Image (cartoon, rainbow, N blue to C red; front, side, top):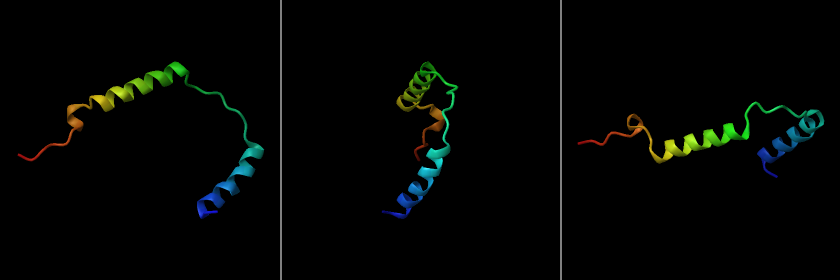
Length: 55
């Protein structure tokens, strides 16, 4: 096992012994909206974020 794998295993058991469920603050609709905004940003980035080409 790799060094990172050992570190993950050392974390896993103690974490699982004390882990508790949590209440999500976002809904699936919130996530859908975020993903749609990200898709629009990737498909059509704002002009100011585009690199300038040398003339």
